[in-house]
Image 1 (tube, rainbow, N blue to C red):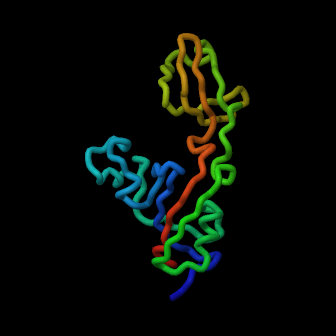
Image 2 (image 1 turned 45 degrees about the vertical axis):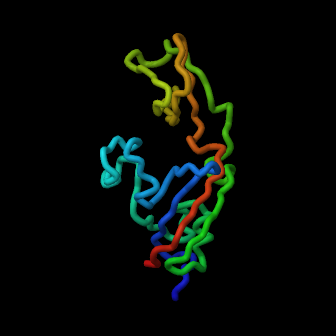
Image 3 (image 1 turned 135 degrees about the vertical axis):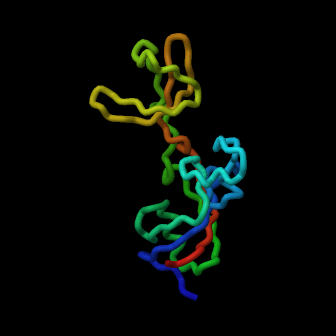
Length: 167
């Protein structure tokens, strides 16, 4: 049976988990799609590509930098149907959690029509028009605290994956 090599275009199924077992991403409909989270009423909510749940194998070129390098490297030598598990340390995934990326802004500096809520994700722009994605982590009468860390910063990621097909 043919084995995957660097440069091959392949299809893989995967499930990404945090160290506590929480699934944060999956190509498998049964695992990554939480109908409550998607705002859908059935498990078929993943038919909407914008719902945040992806199903069906992911296509990538091994060595193309389309996915984590550790996963792409682990695919080399695999045959369709083979399975592996790779753990990616936080520093190689989305980086360590950086307290310096948490900051507060006086409400008076924010647009009047902005009504921030904890958990809300926003894009802020500075005076140089550089944009930064943030999450609202605290709202007081006078200020709003934002976190510019990636939601998975500081987390080791474990990917369980299988090679579905070599294209």
